Image 1 (cartoon, rainbow, N blue to C red):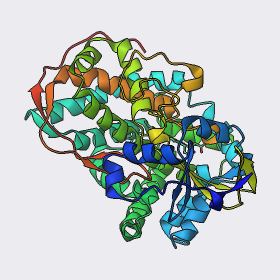
Image 2 (image 1 turned 180 degrees about the horizontal axis):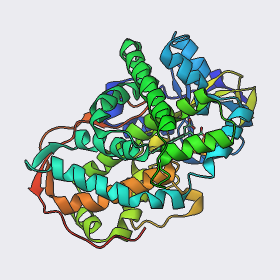
Image 3 (image 1 turned 135 degrees about the vertical axis):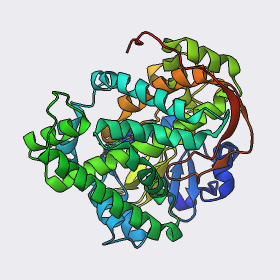
Amino acid sequence: MQRLEELDLYHLPMSDAAMGRNPWPEFEKARQKHPWLAQWDEYGYVIHAYDAMRELFADESKLRPPYADVVDELGQQGTPWGRFTKEQMIALPVEEHRLLRNTFAAKFTPRFANQLRPMMRETISRLLDEWIVDGKMDFEHFASHFPISVMFSLVGAPHEDIQGMVDDLEVIGLAHSYQLDLFPRIQEGMVRIEQYVEDLIAKRRENPRTDGVEDLLELLIKTADEGNIDPQQLQDLISFFFIAGYDTSKNVLTYTMYTLLDHPDIYKRCGEDYEYCKKVIEEALRWFNPGTVARYADADFEFRGVQFPKDTMLFFPLSISGRDPVTYPDAQTFDPDRPIEAERRHIAFALGKHMCLGQYIARAQLQEAIHQIPQRILDPKLSGEPGWRPFPGTWGIRGLPIEFTPGEAVAREAEPA
Ligand code: HEM
């Protein structure tokens, strides 16, 4: 058995801006030194191989979510973000998390997501009407309005409040890239979101819907009341939905567009073939996803002949796992017709007991968007250099300027779910 400090590992420059622009060469260097493990000098170790990530998550009892420790490490104890981060669903002790998750998971089904598709279609269509007029746009800016508009419709919140929320969510999404200078602004955003969600719940309790429609807010309040969920936990859960569902979905949509700029045939077919969009989104989630999941070793443990001491911090860059050449033949080719095999299914939505609760909603809204966008944004071309968010945390493109020919809105029969 080898001790961690005896290994000759590649030191990944995780915080470097260059990693945000193009992390794959760095991970290739890491692979040359060790098949599945590298080092991040400031924080811990990086499990960089797809199969090692899956194997480690097969028994999660040795891992604990990092949030409480990270808040302390960043000196954010007692702050609004620190309080929220330590108490949010994903950070709860095992039993509390299980209770909360079991209460809500039964509702977050593919069926529920499918019921939301007409609203998603209407939302993306309305946003396209507003944004495509000039034949040029920052696609990332456009995309930032889509998942949040869906979320606002889901909870019955007025859409004029969206821009303020987008600005706050943008900066909160950078918290897990660990840049200390951002925290004053993160705290401001957190206070505003918590207040917003508190008011939203209070208004709905005062004025329940009378039209018989059970939107997400109605569903969450009812489920929380039936399951005796604490009011603060309900509020945190709704804030978490805003945070967890915003830049994840936006970044996947933006990167998918960025990719399809180089694949005009696939792009065009997305606009014509609704079923094909599902394949494109699954391949897009393999090709790019925003997440690096972090955990601590909760006890000393051995894995593949390496001894990990308790409290070692471990990072799982799901974001690059889909291009692992050991797992995926021709990993650097974007191919929506690639067969999907269970043992190589992408892990963009993570693994195990914290696997994304919003995955069916995320998939549905990405599929709906990537079907309508090619019908309205014709012949898109990059019109400037894209920028990049930091690699750790919620990674993605920051600014994607494009030019295109605006297309007419197409009146269509309702698409199948
Ligand atoms: C493409 C979009 C999305 C991606 C790539 C994504 C990815 C993830 C990942 C990787 C995790 C696990 C984090 C960890 O284990 O530390 C997660 C958890 C979670 N996500 Fe998502 N997510 C997306 C969209 C959404 C949406 C739209 C919602 C809400 C409507 C959502 C709600 C959640 C929740 C509640 C959890 C925590 C589950 C738990 O702790 O049991 N996500 N997501």
